[in-house]
Length: 300
Image 1 (cartoon, one colour):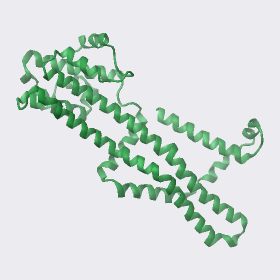
Image 2: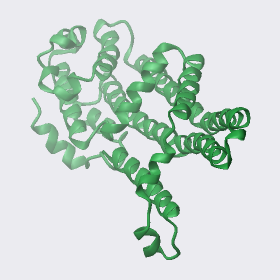
Image 3: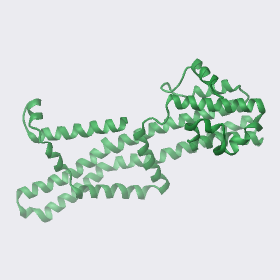
Image 4: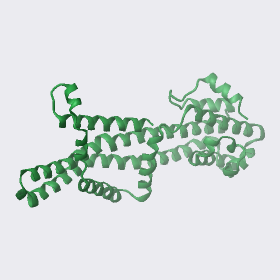
């Protein structure tokens, strides 16, 4: 939601300033009163958008594989939703882990087999829909517990395995952000290319049509430069940064899972294991220690 609000403020501010400048006047009130609101239409030229769009889309296809391009789309759309996890989502996560760990403590690690081997059908996980619907998080937790349940590794060998999985997740999230940043860096130059094409058209076809035609042609060319710079610093760049922050939030969720699972596997009580996971969280979503204990008492 904040992304939409920020985008609207940018567009309204730019278009209002342009309309006020087009209308003339001296004082702020006079400029606003004389603003030419229809002048914003003069910024829109289909040929400039086609040229810019072709350069952006073509360069993305050249620089990145299809899996990364799908990530660009999903992460861009994800910025519209805001922060991926709320405090309530973490409360649900810790309840789920606490109930799972309690089950493992009472019945041994083998008691977790039906849940970690077939999480889609788990009656425990299905009680926590936000977590159960996050397939990456469920898979990450179950992949961490499976070798412990099977007895293939010792508890102290679990942390490097889960850390390696986290590292791969971070790289997979960073790749689409890298593409967005590359596009943001290139957009001003794409705008210059579009402007140069417009100037060439003016020089070849409009010089003999009079000053007005030449002026319109140059204005059209400059619109390409405007949208290249505007798209870089006001659209793509901020979206890339927002996607990066969302990625940090997603990694914090995974790190809380890792901390809890590793702590429990190494023999800490369920409540203490969840407390270790709580300490991985940032202040905006982190509950107090007493609040966590009260929350877990209602689990299971």
